[in-house]
Image (tube, rainbow, N blue to C red; front, side, top):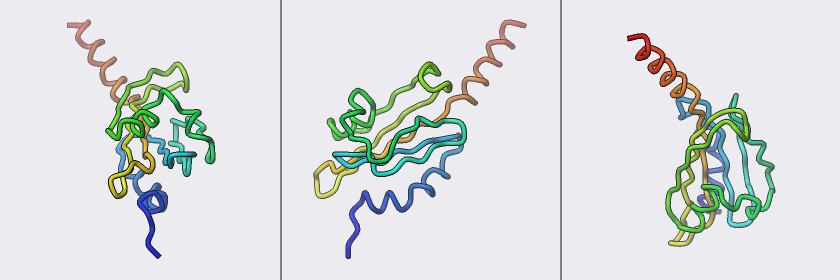
Length: 124
């Protein structure tokens, strides 16, 4: 039995999550629904498995599936209490988009470093 790319990605999702040096949440979806969601330690967007993909219109995940191209966007802490960078990559099999994998990576460390640098520069 041959697995498709979405099944292979789902099986490897926790391994993929561990490759991120920052806290990250991962979402995997086919063209209809969310197949898997792994929250990060601090970043948890509470994405329900089985949720229809239509609920995610306007997100990088939805745009990646529509455009068949990688999409990225930085979001502030307003919605989930933590700033994050969202990246979505369409999953393509036999030339057809069959889904998307997306990572939401906390930008807390980068923001803290930037704040520290600004504080130092104001002291000089």
